[in-house]
Image (cartoon, rainbow, N blue to C red; front, side, top):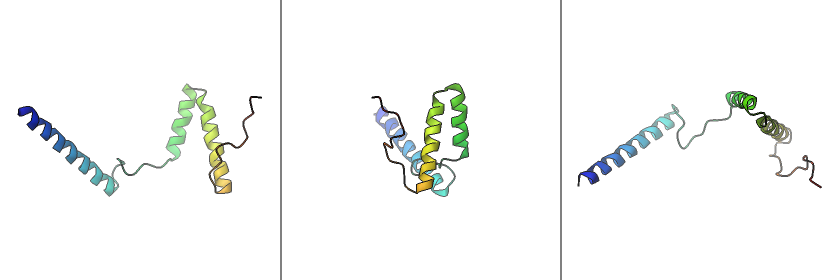
Length: 89
């Protein structure tokens, strides 16, 4: 019976904390479940630092920048296969 009581208390506390965090998110104080932070300059800088420690990651950064530039120029998102990569044959 004691285990059921503590289990109920834990569930109620977790639900209360969840509601508190959702309320704080609605106020704009935090990002929790419903709103995601936008990609800003800090994300780009962290990816550059990551590329120092993993040199292969630099290709990922260049591909993302290339896609963003094409999207900015055309206004449409880039196609999945654009033919820029050399073929294996």
